Image (cartoon, rainbow, N blue to C red):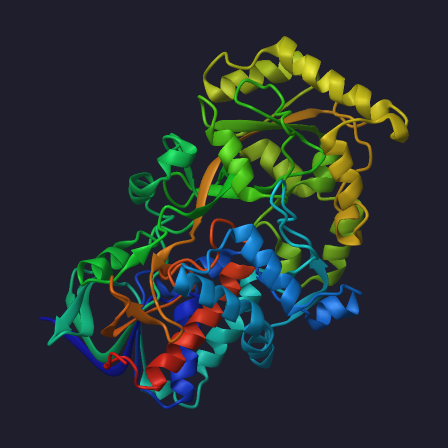
Length: 542
């Protein structure tokens, strides 16, 4: 027997995008059906597992820290870093709209609903050769991604119009339904194998991107830029982000743009307690670690340093014969600088323990280092460089790491560190000196740290792989979230938001993201799509 749902609006996907849209539509008194493939304990999707960083412009947090920002400056940074082309109409318009409106439409909306932010603002994506964020704009949510999602879920369950919401988990939408030229809903199967149909005047695809489906990632991989995709890659997304609904929308004539553009990370490691195949974690690379190629030789043209240009890191590593890398450091550096993106490994922020968070910043995070050194199969420790090289080869299952070359590269770097500051001549040391001028980075970055140091042992090597995370392309949509066909005309009844639409318009970031624009893009695009639905624009072509 087929279960049938009827409402004004069908939302497919229970991540941050779907939750935001549902809240907006309930506020307007609409009847909403929200279907999610996952179980209820995973309500909130990848956003709930995230670290919870958001990109805002000229925020109270920036102003309180003496950071002079402006819409004009941020828009200049975004266009330049993403290499946006004004002729790419909808991505360009979405990017412009986000930069101009993220403060009231995202931050203001979230704060009104119980989300709070640290005063300190992080400085990510400064850029290597293409300048990135001119000033710090990465705002950290108090509570990580949990602190983003849980207040909104509480609002959803306690909404005055909660009776107008049909919320179902374990519902996999397999296809969209179209009648008379308009999308009128969708159908699929529950986890228990029961068929269902959901009919609505407007259908919003909020089902995420493609990063959880490595077959799809390989299919659209930008081979002309990065060569063949790495084998293997790690999955830093969720399995439900498989691109199925993007493909189904395309089959109905929706334009899908910029799908080869992805925001993958260069410093992925295997999860020591994996929940699915190839489950990976994204390290926040320590700036004092030496980044080595698969042979254990240092990248020197230029030295690779994290938090400057994520796309550049992925590009350099993927140009190798074997597309993985190593980070070599010591225990003292790791305790000061090692971090992992996401809620799971930031419990003091996730659980809002301010004293514990302050202690970690001041004293380091030896507990985290021990956890990874003992449990993560990509971590090895040793007392000598030659012992380290042998263990690196054992992890990789090869003899690619040359102990003599590794030893020589480390010794050359350490000799440079030991020189008087005025005689140091290494681009990594220059970048470290630069980032330490900003308090937020100085607290988490070592000063003139040698790798081989008797007072900082043991040595650590971390094998890092490419980790898929987010899609920068997706279903093309106008500023009301209406899915567009190849001619630029709306498909009646069909809307797209969040990662399914490249976080807006089919790719508002361009080639690179300034970070913090993913969660922000989910909220912003969901609200814009909800407005489009409320304006009754889903069924016309004006």
